[in-house]
Image (cartoon, rainbow, N blue to C red; front, top):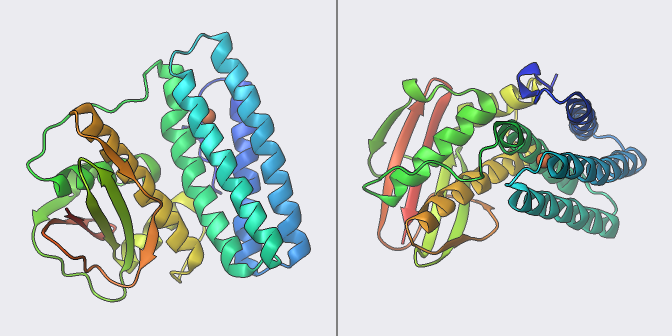
Length: 280
Ligand SMILES: [Fe+2]
């Protein structure tokens, strides 16, 4: 099952709604895995969209009722995600609900939802503002690597303590899943994440509670969103140091290679290897 009791906030009404959202997302993933038809896809997307809108409104009302001071930033996350779902709906309606786009949607929704509920929503209760703690790093790649480790720990219970970080040039075999993100602003260039097949599948299995054997579009789009969240957090940390950094949407890449001077970090975890390069 995708839902875990550790995701509870302790506000019954909101927890019930989150459970319902996870159930719908699980249905969506199952439908996509089974290759269900257009009709079922339409239904799953319709339910999800309506419920997302309903739930966000209710959760925002709750935040207002407790005078949560991180509400504006939280609302913006809701707005962006609603827009993502609407963009998918537009694409899917235009192309007849093809399997590949459905897998992209399912992977993106799964990753976004888990991270949002486990991290962002928990802050409503803890009263924490949406900013991370500040650490110092020698190289940009280290900052991005630590952001990725934080996200993987939050989402998939990956034990950071047992991860080994090494600065080195990438090994990056072809069967890895590569995700690239353009960075713009004072810190300008590209971040590349290379997930080993083993890590990719383990992360998704932990997140979905389902057995997966193939790195397909579902897995790829989930890793794109995970990279997006990690780089977003790293960019926020840079902004706090007075460096403007915006990120562009992630894209799957055929290889690790990037032009320019970069630094790389290899992370070995018990669940597999992740390599991160930052080229400026
Ligand atoms: Fe929320």
